[in-house]
Amino acid sequence: METYYDPADLERFGDIGKDAPELAKKYFDYYAEVFREGELTAREKALIALGVAHAVQCPYCIDAYTRACLEKGSNLAEMTEALHVANAIRGGASLVHGVQMRKIAESLSM
Image (cartoon, rainbow, N blue to C red; front, side):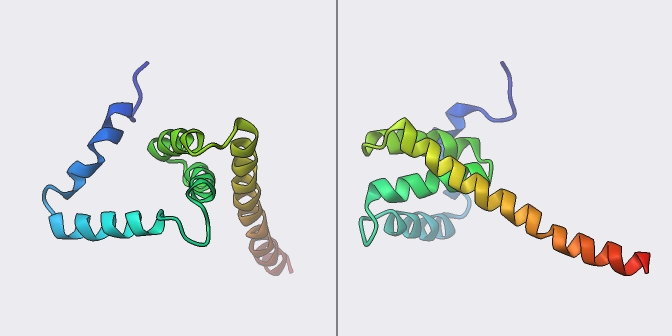
């Protein structure tokens, strides 16, 4: 099946720095620092990243962090729970904007 997203492109992510090496280096250095063990474990960070990947709908990130979560010892139930947390936040963010819609609709209806 053909898609806009080629899974093989994930392996070429580093190519993004070919014409802007300084910016790419800064990004990849920052990225590596963010995912280093800290107050949160690498496993916890991978679960957060998996949830965010779903929220921003990045198939490359979903691929990468599904693999990372499994490699760091997460199970499918934990990963599914992370997805539901992301969905609850994303869905809530959409719904709370309904307040703005209601305010505008109510002011125009008066």
